[in-house]
Length: 283
Ligand SMILES: O=C(O)CCC(=O)C(=O)O
Image (cartoon, rainbow, N blue to C red; front, top):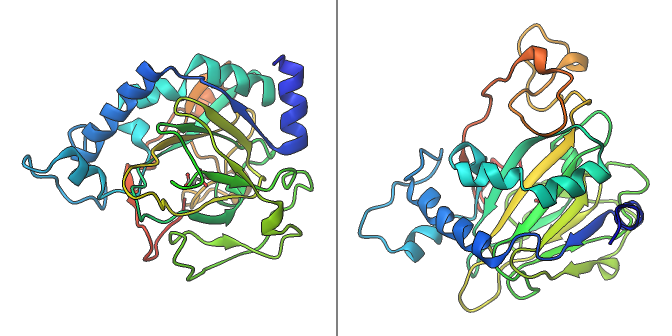
């Protein structure tokens, strides 16, 4: 697909798929790294119970639904954030200067919940609507094991729909979007093979369902990116900083130059778990 086709499809649907962006060797290394991360071998994860050396890899992995900010623990995950094929797609879609601010490693073994309808910009508010996710499958992602579902074109109005708490046991504790002019029957499952990447717009309504397979994981590494030209007022601004000037500087530049490099970088977030149902989720 040419850059123009890629962009046209992304603008129309709000998402596109990079088939086999990573080969199975690269995926295998990330799967092994996920075990080291979950064992706590690469550093502490807030909210995680320590693993005993007698615990099998499966015992350890199954304790996690999702780990936030794994790129702060693993050089391999950080390198994947900068993967040339992913970055090349991002520069075509966003522009020459691109920064990343977040990563999430989903393990999601059988029985673990999905995440209700939402728009990522609701959680990570760029000022220029450039938020873009790269969702990398580490297992074949299927309807059975809880692949992503999207509402194609739902990013186009550029509207953030309201959010509320929910008690739907199919989904984790993250709030859900509601009151949007689309129906579940408009939803499309995005089934992709391990190593393929779904790139999607931060206004696209998307969700995932539980892993209903008998046994197995639906692992995925999800990174979020945006234009380096935009400030990012994410989280509580430091005392004395007006919201209009707030700028999350816990970022990784993945392409081009950072016009705000003079501000330096700041460690704001530490790796932590996402609870699977009982409150306290903020993406
Ligand atoms: O992978 C999932 O189950 C949900 C991921 C998601 O919704 C996101 O990355 O925004």
